[in-house]
Image: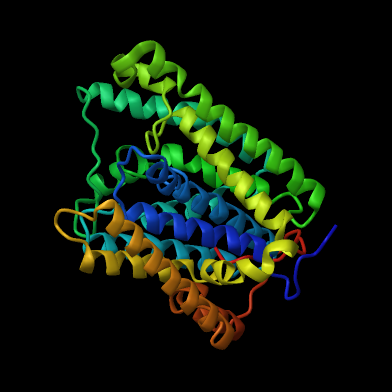
Length: 368
């Protein structure tokens, strides 16, 4: 086994989170249509970056719960984080109609992790497999029942509670019935020693095969069925990015597994050039919220052209990487990351100490 770094933090995982952040910036800046090879490469993160974000979150949450299995503070801490992300995400959605904020889905997934923490890792993987099939079927059934219409408008603070839950569970841009898949895969990955080069090498192969295989299989239905592939239950055979269908889930989750495993497998080689990316990954929540606010202020009504989008994405990414490198070196955790830590809960528990009996595992906890 090779331990990549001191301080019990696995920086390769932070780097993967940073890659997800940079990819989401590209996607949210846009534009999302392009025909040339350069434009297609630019849009490669579309349908993949957010999935990578969620897989990393699953790893972080499972590791945190395992490392704090004997600590009564883990429940209120996770509930605090879930509430902050859920309510804060709904509030952030109020400032933009163009971007779908993923944070409320994070809040629900964090609460789900509390309920699943006692399950065996293989049950997490089994649950991901079942959801890969059942989730898309539920979504297609919902679409068919509505005459082909699907609710895509993001919900925000102030919307009816029923509408918010319906959107977050079934009909929104990040429905829980399918986005539970990358989160559960991340939780399962956390059960392996990701500092072991043999483990990460195996995960790279599995993830790469799933990413390529899922993508290639998704090309068959449109070729055979044509336009009919986009209607009714034939959609289950397609793999359009963010289409919530099984082959997209397999391909995008496989790609995420590959990126995470590769980041950790080759960390000792890339750490000198990937350090700023890892620093940005440790401040991912701060920069995620920041990029939404910046784009709300600068995006024109007609959206960016490809050239403009390329410049904005590059400028924002360079600025975030520079700020992250300086901030983490001088100040440590980012401002919103400090808020997530809920140090006030730690002080409260120290004045009223309570411990519970459980089997703890000595594992490090990356930022979730």
